[in-house]
Image (cartoon, rainbow, N blue to C red):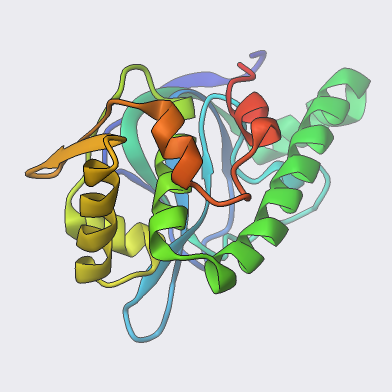
Length: 210
């Protein structure tokens, strides 16, 4: 990407905290960046994830100044192309194709956020967990994720016991194996059968666009 620089990141790297001014955007080429909302009582929940299909803060192409409302942290090792917001805005003003691509991604992300609001309120933890694993699987190479119960609970906004019960149910169904913080997807079709209606072909198509 013109005027961008390569940027490698490891699990746990913090890109932004709530309230930070967005000075760079990141076009992910490998790995996952999670946007996580943090409440005053310390509870957290992932609001969306960005993989090789997307870019952090797509609204920065149009807005004069953008503030991050969530923590952006690396969920999986990876790399990306980093570009200053001012430079991206200038390129977008010059290049219709760039504006169109970023706008299309922003539209898809907005639709996902709206669906997630209903999903978090109405669907069982097991269904949401299956959906979340499928979304991760779409964005990584291989079938294994190294994730502790504590981390999973923070992503799903659930108690560790709830996550453990959901993981055990998925393992019993033959969809995954789960041991000592390592989840391996062994039957994707079984995982899709458990996932709620919020995971669909469009979501997978967007995630695999890279």
